[in-house]
Length: 119
Image (tube, rainbow, N blue to C red; front, side):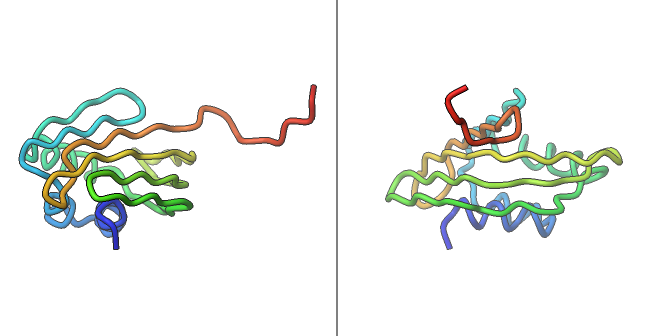
């Protein structure tokens, strides 16, 4: 299993320690809607706070690219947060250092995907 897959799986099962084990001490995570989390302690604080009202219902990797110092994944995501359902497709890119995530940036689609037919 790749590091990004381990990271995602750990979020799905709400395992803060497992998420942290995927990260370098000086990690940086950039979420698709703006927040930046710098360092393991900040990530831990964010997760604990998010898990108070948030629950990942589905986070499925649909495409995966793995290289020695780089991983990327496309995924579909559904969660409940503060009682509201959120669903979108996105992608994560990761720079690795010594087999752990040093930098992770998420991107999301902003509208449903559709086939273009020339109009």
